[in-house]
Length: 467
Image (tube, rainbow, N blue to C red):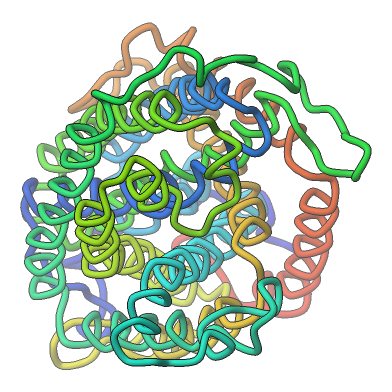
């Protein structure tokens, strides 16, 4: 552990070996589409049912709390991304500002986060695809649902992961262009949902507004409930902008484009989410769609709008892969940079002739495919949130440290009221982590014990501060 507190020197892409150099092909519209594609997905299309089950109509308040915490973290990300325009996101910022050991912890958290997000979104996609495949092609449900729903293996989830992995190996710009087109499909579907459901708004559906209280409580069945318990899960619905930061080395003008991508995508998604949440909870009593794998489509069917429900489900099937693509992209880049730094085998940090890390992409596809095939959606989302909360706290802390260490350093974006935004992001993330299910907290800690062993036995022996 000779380098445990060593800080990394920022290396420009021109200094890297050709086989470790990513191609700059993305502009700010690509980044905003990448961010919106990552943020708007399973969280609003599927997890609103899980959140309603935990908080009742007060799930609207859960959305507000999670959104505020994520917005604070997004501002910190925007500042750090323009100061350190290198791939790796929170992992790289922690390595440059704090040191190698903290960077490993954050990087390991990001690997957990992105792997679990890809798996969770694939399961969410399957929830919308399975009824359509059964109705249109007669595919048995036992082959399209995981064991938690009485099935054998979630084959649609594994299939969509394989498709997205193949697309990413073709090329970054091609993937980003297709992603932008599919994001439009997804946003239009949510607009249709709001237009159809909002006229059915009934204030009676909001009563009782908060049946399980504010803080996390345990019901008779051992299930955590309350506004904060729901916020800790719904938090999954808001992050995704952090995937933009992993694209720093593939962005044409990172000092300008990164701040537009991070802040712009977050603002757009907060507006969309609040409209959808209010329309959903107001149109149908939450008990009708709680824990449904396709809550928005179910709400439309309950309102006697089967055509709109089919359109929404079909749009989700077409467009949810944008979330898988964005997080899969981010995960492969975190893996890539950690391997390039020597914390993981450097042979994994080799790009193909098209400038994409094929080896890392294939390895990631195998891991997340196994998770998606057999693990329940709610468990995947909770575990992913734990990793994200760690990364968000690290970025906010890095921003505060740099404001004190180098107050006059050039910043293309400056977080307003940083002395308030930073602590709110850190404190909010800590509270959300405490609000996660206990088994999630224990699994997360166990995963980091494994990660620390890997670092001690491998990573700490093969790095150098200027790797």
